Image (cartoon, rainbow over all chains, first blue to last red; front, side, top):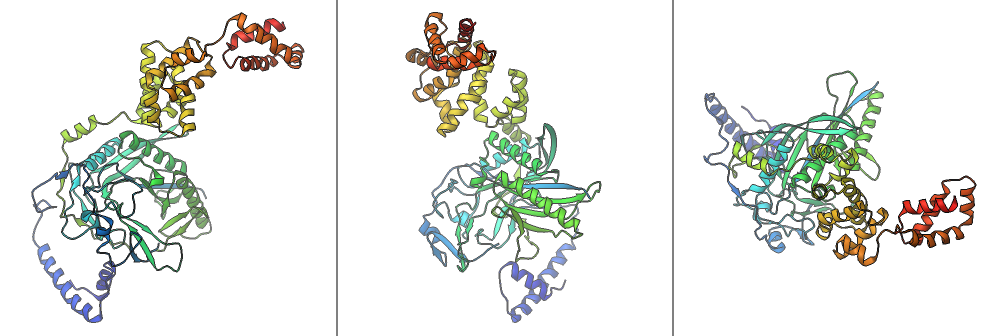
Length: 95
Length: 483
């Protein structure tokens, strides 16, 4: 399965990423190889195999509805590139 | 050409847990921004979410109440999208195996019952809140992540509603049920209930659905009705002109009272769902469901029918009294006590619907505060005094006000304040003579044939007796005097 530049652009847009033409060429090759590998996997007959949703054979792992201390606001914001008045500050997004 | 309106609703209900869905952060409304966050809900690397059992059981309860099929196996999935309200860049939600599906809700519109299908109910985590500064030139948005990771239940209906009124009834009924179950406050103002609507038109008699628009920003029950009515009209006008409806998302603009197109920069959504590897799947067995069913209260509609047959109250009374569970719980306790003590049931319901509601509204208090000060047995004792005609019925408000403020019983208040009804002829005569003397014009009207004028005189006597005179007795004595 061959990946084209349009698909690379779509994936980049979804991830809010920008690629150079040089990078796009590299990714076309790499993505195509990954998909070829997946095609190969898909050729295996799995008709009699139950779909696996998790690699651990565990279920119903819960925690009780109890409160634990949160971070302080200073801690919460400490990784933020920008902040103001206790908020994270981000480039304007508007609908 | 006539069109049929087709409406489906997508409702998000925030579950009323103490802690968030996957971490121990508080869930209170109105906290200072970014103070109820931790590494898990901030989506910091290396953290592990763990499902809050209460949130899952609340959701199961809600789905059972909506007559849903419960899956015996369910899992969570990652829904990917890049937006600053979602620090992980994916939302933990449910995709192809929701925990419940195929339910229904019976709604009542104009006295008729209609069944609205529920496609599915699933659980997910909420996103944060974005604030866009008013000034157009400001190049930034602000993010508060307190709401991130709150347990959210999505209830998707079938496109079974055919008018804004039906959509409104569906929402009202949904809210009522959730509040009865105690799983959510469903307060649209606080965002604990949010609603998106899909609306399309189809020519009457046709089978296939028309192109729909999705309407967002419906922040109150009133907006929902108004926005849907507007959107139906807008689409009908376009179709009349021979134009096509575009499938799009539209925002309700309350100031202008229109829906307007929400231009989205991103093309078609591509959420790239896959199973959430941080969470193990869930198996739901019959025993678990049976345990949950045991904790479910009688639901509003069933309760209304039962109240009508068990206590002989009217449809209207049942509707008003069952709007909130706490009110009908209180009233029913009082009704049961009244039955035991042979007190007239109507005296009890009249007290709740009249003076009790008046106190709640006037004092702007929660019903729970009222029940603490005036327990059901005290209300019944007041009803008993009314039955025995110890006091005039119009005095019940005065006595109840005093019961609420002082916590005393009706009996004590009536005694202390001397509020007993006065039926004694000797006590009433002087007042009646005085009133007749001072109201010669009304007396003349009465004697001239205007029989209803006597009520004005009864009113005067009542006032002169500070509301304590027995009105029947007063009328009787007046008639004699004037006869």
